[in-house]
Length: 264
Image (cartoon, rainbow, N blue to C red; front, side):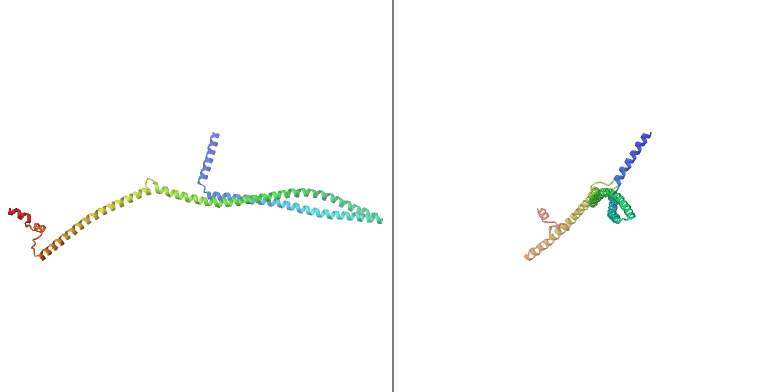
């Protein structure tokens, strides 16, 4: 049972982690990574500053010890000279006093020389550590600047990706149905084109009927004008002209064909 619970817990953690990675905003994650890199660089600078400060302190201690060594050495030499002068003067008390002082200075010289040797070793190590710290800070600074430059490029690439995704989504919407209740762009276009084509067809049929009636009226008007003109010409020539056959038929009178048949 415990094993099953452990497996179940690991599965849930992996699933939640996967969902988080899928839903997380890359821009925020990128900024978090840059912030972490900047914090790491700041910590590195602080550590390097401590190393360099230690090297500076060791150098100051070494310089003070060297200065003290020179001063004590000068005092020891002076004590020896004064003891020798007192010896030549026969002043035994001063000889003993100056000799004791010279011995103390000599002991101090031995201690200072040992301290200086140790400080030199410490200063050498501190100098190497300081150089390494400076190099590490310089190298990390270059990497940080590179990451900042890459951040700008990645943000630009991310914006382009989002824009392309939007375009792809729009194109998919134009060619595919969004859902059962929402028609696609192509379906709407076909529906509009069908209505437009039907409206144009009805309009053309209506225009055809009107044109036919107008042409019929124009033809009848031209026939009337032609008959009137023909009657005018016959009158000028002194030829009697009877009513047109169409008018005679309309009035109920016989036409030429009926007269010939009745005479027969």
